[in-house]
Structures are given as structure tokens and as C-alpha cells.
Length: 384
Image 1 (tube, rainbow, N blue to C red):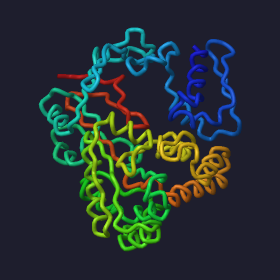
Image 2 (cartoon, rainbow, N blue to C red):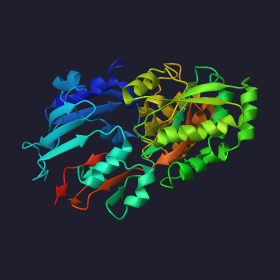
Image 3 (cartoon, rainbow, N blue to C red):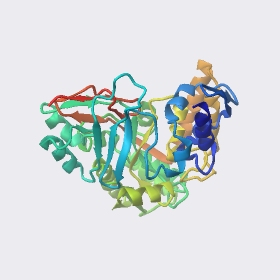
């Protein structure tokens, strides 16, 4: 009912519980429920990203909010059965679902793979019917055997978060040196096997691959023979591979990178806690209204894992300015300021778009995906 929606907005606005949704509701002044079927949202100022806000606000049953780490909650086509951490989650058809006749399958098992090769093997052997994200190296060779569905280009981007509070990257020149040291085209060709493209043109124009310029900026920052640790996740083999490319190129100018592979629990604990120097990662929401980038933890305007609550002012001001106008001329100017602030401060080095490729067995029909490249199984049918 409407009161449940209000509770969800209250949770999002709570500085201790809101997490990534906190900046999304910063412009919300009040949410009320005048009756069980009506929700009234009042904004502090004009809100051009209202549709993105509503899309991001997944409504959770208030009574289940404190148990979300162990159970699912929602009103979707499937209901929760069990969760075995690190192995699988099982859902079954929700007979009370409000949709007309769907879903078409009785049971869905989400299998977790820590090794991408094992995941691909499970698809090929028939253990799995759908793989959510095929490794780039396998896309070309599986194209004849399976139906490949490409997600939205730009739904995610490969990035290198940089901790601007830890030496040597507490100096802006050192962070900018990394921008020049990343061979974005090389990453696309060597690591992503052409299943992508380098990141936005403005980044490439400002920071072309130039190791000599990177060396000059390191020297300007007082960095000679520098060294840094770079974290990566093994579940996505392209992430450590990107780090290896960066490591090899930086070694040419005397900077050493130590690659540290961590499981997801350790990785996210350190990255979200700001306990890192460099990390290979990816961010989402880049295909939405530009201010939505602040939903990513590394781009938060408050409780930022790197900057805490001392986020670069030019960036925060640009987010605020872009969030408060629907005038196209003013929006364009605000977007330019936002882009300039991110490129200047360089606490995130954008590398390439992450192209999600779903692998489907030939007997699977009705598959769809959201604007965020999340699998939609409501209309899926299986004809074996």
C-alpha cells in the first residue's frame, strides 16, 4: 500500500541506512500517503531525473527491511524459497502475482559461479539455461551454439577507482597521471576482445594514452619510483586483466603496481570502506540522467568511500546544478561542469564501456532485460 512506499523513501533518506539511494532522494522534500492507493512526492526543487528515481526505488515490505541480507522481499512474479550463500538462490512461481498469467516457469535457480570458465561450461553442458554475463573472450566462439543477447552499451563502465586520500594519489597530478597511463584502446582490443569500446570521447580527448605525459605528472606530484596496490575480483576475469595491462604500462615509467586478487566479501569491504589505493571495478547508471552517476558508491556526494563527506566541491555543485533544472541550455552547461569536475579531480579513471552479453540456450524464449541489464524472467518459457 502507499504507506509502504513512504517507508521506503524514509529508509532511502536515512544517512545510516540509505547507502547508494541516499543521494537519489536528496531532492525529495516530503513523501506522503493521503490514502492507501496514492503517494504524493514533493521535491525541494524541479526534478528532471524523477523517472530514474522511481526506477531505482525498489519497493520493499517495511517489515522485511532488516532481514534483507538473508531473505528476499517483493511483489514480483517469483517468491523466495532459499538462499545458500556462495552457491545458489532458489525462487518459485508466485501464485499471487498481479501479472496476467505469468510467469511461465515454475522455478528459477540462480547459480553462483566464482569461476567464469565453469559458468560457461555449465551453459554448454546444459546445467544452466541462461548465463547473465558471458566473459568477452567467449562471445565470438559461442555465437553459433547459443542465442546471444547484448544489453545496453553503457549500462556499465569499466573503471579504476583511485583513493585520493592516500599517497601518492592524494596529489591530483598523480591521479591525472593515471588517466594518461591507461591504454583504453589496448584494453578493448587485448582484454575485452573487441566486445566494447573505449569510454566517452571527452575523456579520450583530454587524456589520450601518453606514458611520457604520465611520467611528467608523476614527477610534478613528487612521485619517483612510486608503488601502489591494486585490488581486483576474480569472478570477472577482465578486471585483473585490465590491472595487468596498467601494471605493465606503468612499469615502463618506473611505477610499480602490486595486483591483489580478493574474494567479493573482502574486496567490497575494503573498497566500500575506503581501504584501498587502486581497484579495478565498474559503475552503472551511465546511460541515465547524468546526475544518476552519484548512485554509485565511488561517486556519492556524501558518505563517499574515498572522500567521506569532503567530496570535491566542484563535483557536488555540478550535481546539484544539473539536478535542479529542466532548461536544456542550463542542463548542457551543468553537464559540462560535471564532466570537467570528474576529469579534473580524477578519483575515478573511466576506461571502457562494459557490454553485457547474455548467453541463452536455444530452447529459452521470452528473455528480456532492464535498463540496468538485469535479467527479466517474467515472460521466459522453456521448450525442451
